[in-house]
Length: 302
Image (tube, rainbow, N blue to C red):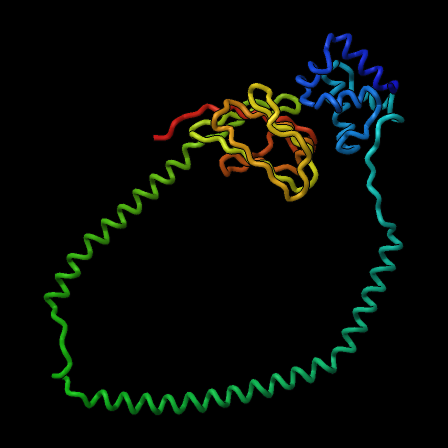
């Protein structure tokens, strides 16, 4: 057991918490809590989560996280980002531009020949189309003159009475259809507006919402990058625990539940939708670990 693990365990026991109690409070799996106390971080999803879990452990047992991180910084993993040296980047850029320019210059003569050939073919096509158009115009004029010679008395006339009667019968039906369509659109809009998702409180890293006005509660979680996710119901039963990778998605149906409790390990990489409506985080995604609580009051639609 590491010095940090012993310090955390002593604080937990002084509070009278068992590992099961701490798991229930922090929503962190018991095996991860045991790994923190033993100083074994290999079972963690990554260095990023080690720091997040230790911070949550400290807050639960009443220890100041900032002081703990400073005092035991040699034991706690640090996340780092490597950068490519500027000199290497500049050399590669100049090399790429030089090679590309050389290829373009070599391709110019061939390109000019292709353009000339295309131009000649286009001129021939325009000439042929123009000739064909003149022939068609002459033929149309001949047909038109033949049609004019037809005696007007042989052309049947429309019965104005029947036309007027038909218009009178069709117009009311058309207006009725339009009115019915407007009523249907109004009903659909009203039905969509019945669902309400309201943020009711924000405490620390926890945000609570109220979902009303709908008879279904369908939850979807999607990831733009790696993010550890925990999903629980009002009985604290585990519905899902694991890491979502980029492009993955998990769907849940809470229509028969009264609450959904979500632990989002990396809020910036995780999207939440309820019945197709995207949920905006009540806390900026700079706060990496966030708990989202959604209380659901089922209402039957008429």
